[in-house]
Length: 348
Length: 122
Image (cartoon, rainbow over all chains, first blue to last red; front, side, top):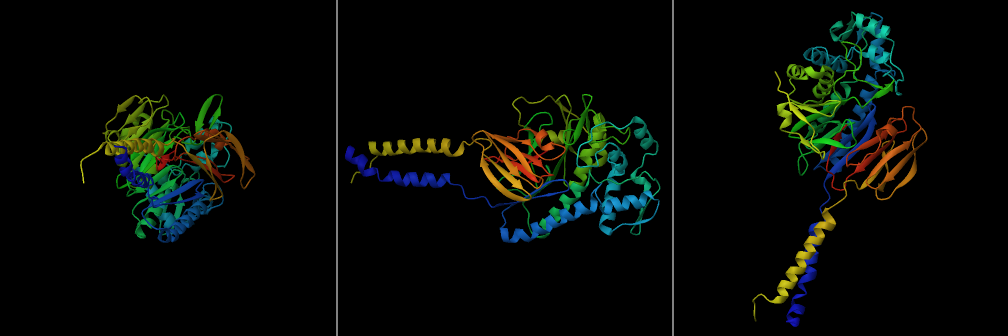
């Protein structure tokens, strides 16, 4: 018997070798690029492509982001601030074709959101002190907000024609803060597709568009608005943008109350009733505008979602309870130890 | 030659099974957060294991940011920026989570060994 064992022992190293080989996974062909633009960190992940083919496209995308950052900055000197100054002087201002297309798209989303996504809100954002790299420390005077509301500028006050713009409201000040990231992400995805790259994530500070897949679907975590870590996750399908607006992104506290940067253009104050709002839509620009508009809509979000053509929505209320549209409920997976209290809200 | 199964075969098979079990536990069961990538001004500055507690200074474009590492997590302790948003972010503890001091161009990225999420919607 002992001799028999000895005779067979030679098999053992073979088995070990086979097992160890199985434990060493092949390096995933994942390429990642990271840079800072539009006031956030841009992360691009590509799957299943070699670095040589990816590098020139990634360099072009990085240049695009930096250019948009300089063209559209809402308070540092940019094409947008120059345009705002000219418009506020009541003059006709030339608008480059690229920016005109973006403003037209913004106007369309402003209309479909019933004015809740409002790029003409720049003056109010500046009043609140959110046009600066530092956080504001105090709430503006109620009179100043009332004065802005009395002349409330809207995207409809902007006339766009033949490469020129004019404003009929001297208070109109464009701010593409709720939109620029989405547009930039869409452009990056277009560039990747033009280069034949079909599996990618373009992530602008957590808001992202994912196309294709890796060896499994792209898996996106959604931050918990009131606790560290992830609240829920979504596996993307095909081509989807996931955008979240949250009251924790930029805020200050005064007299024990939180004042965040998502301002309701109807009353001039930070929108209440929502801690975070997540949407899925194929286009990042639409998802970006919709996340803001639905956050502002508060309890009435299902109507705004229907008006904007958004089917998948998750709203987390400040008390931690969650509202889901039926189509979102099919896709979301909660990752917390205790599942939150969930209400399904159908779209009209 | 006798080709029937002998006790030795069972021994080898048994050892192989033990080895499979051990390999599974050893190689597949990883910590949720294994390491921290530190990026400075668009370049990877360091990759640090999140195993023991320590603090260190990272030189950014404005000055030094102090960061704290702990088992499975990391955070900014101080940074030469005005808003201190990086410090307010608090601990980051899951693969894909990010804390950043953009004025100082220093960012921290948790790398989960199993990379549970490809990105976190912040």
